[in-house]
Image (cartoon, rainbow, N blue to C red; front, top):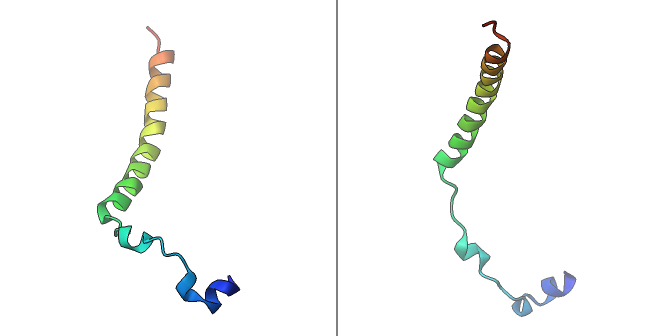
Length: 57
């Protein structure tokens, strides 16, 4: 790393910075909303399935 600091003109530039994109706001919100929906849906479905399995006919 010291060699790169001493001779920055010899460092190979890959161009990663040119391919960067800003993250879309809705993607982060969708992931958070999906987590909350699944966290609420799993217990409800579990109770419904158990109710259907153990109900008296």
